[in-house]
Length: 235
Image (cartoon, rainbow, N blue to C red; front, side, top):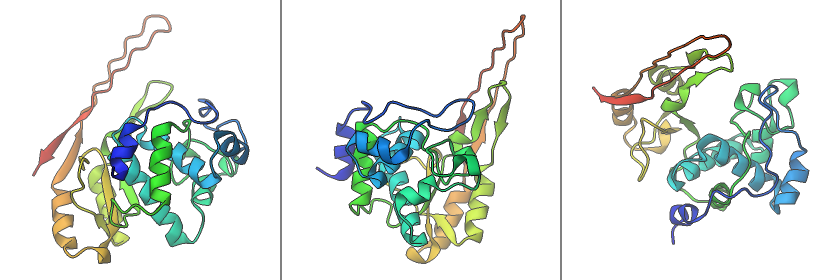
């Protein structure tokens, strides 16, 4: 059974402490090493499993493995451990803690690890190469966000993200089995593929068009907001 099949065969039952980030602070209340020990995992395994569950926890195994590999490859490039990568923060309140990505983190570790995300983390740490050495990813559909106040925003566009990655010599890796690039785009170093220009052209033709419909109905303290998803447009 290949790695993705193994991941997909697992359940979403929680592994270790069932603790998510506090909605007000964005921080998970718990010591990372102690939580990993309780889960019966190394700190790298547990940190990566939380990241997978937070970033792509509801997706198929291919999505979890892809983001896990990007974290492992980025950590290797920076010559740090995976847990160091995921616990480091540009903001003091998030340093050394599991938290939401908004606290200056490389990725979110806000949600509990699951059996499925643990399988993805273990596969990536064992050297799986599903993404061919990729080290960054972008979730177009995840860019439409709503605040606690009900205000909907778009963090960035697919076009801008692709352009920013080009400036870092990162390009879309191309088609990967089981992954829709309008939902999850994986980026690889330009010099690791034979046809980077073709991949750049193709990725620029995949445009995620966010269609946001926000209806707010105010009756006393009641606010209703609805956010629609997006559609893939081939240019």
